[in-house]
Image (cartoon, rainbow, N blue to C red; front, top):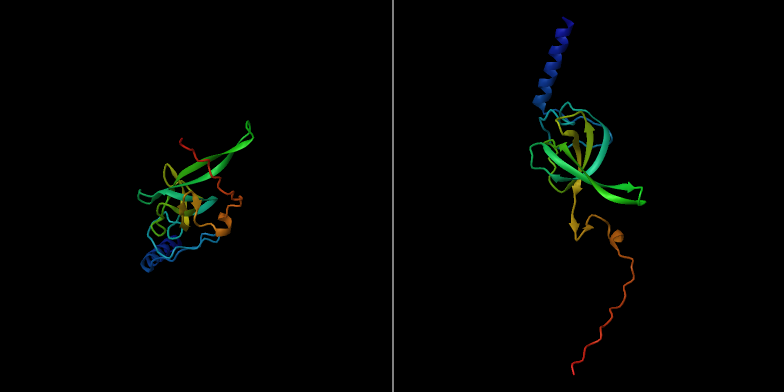
Length: 164
C-alpha cells in the first residue's frame, strides 16, 4: 500500500514537472544551466543523465548528426627517443542536447557520463564562444599577446643590374 502511494506521487511529480517545463538542475562544477529548456532524457540539465569523471575543452568540428557532435582538441605527446614533443589531435563523439545545440567552430566544455551509445561517452555541458582565426592567429587573444617582439631590420636594396 505504501509502495503504491510512493509510485503515484512520483508519477504526479513527473507530470507536473513536464507541464511546467521542468527547471534546469544544478550539475555542479559551476556550470551555468542553459536558458532554453528541452525534453531530451539524455540532457544533464533537463533529463536524468548524471555527469561525472573527466572534463575537457575542445572545438566542435562536426555537428550535422542529430543530437551528436564531434569535438576535437590538440595535445602534446612526448617522444622519449628524440626528447621532444609532437602535436596530436583527440577526436571524440559527444551528445549535443537541444537546449545547448552547439554549432561547428564553437569552443565547448564536455563532461564524461555513462555510455549513451556505442561511441558516445561525453556530453556538451557549456558553450564558451566561437573560435575565430585570422591567418593562423587566434583572434580572441589580447593585442598584447599578439605582438611580435623581433626587431625589424631595414630592407636591403639589391644591386641593380646594368645592361651594357
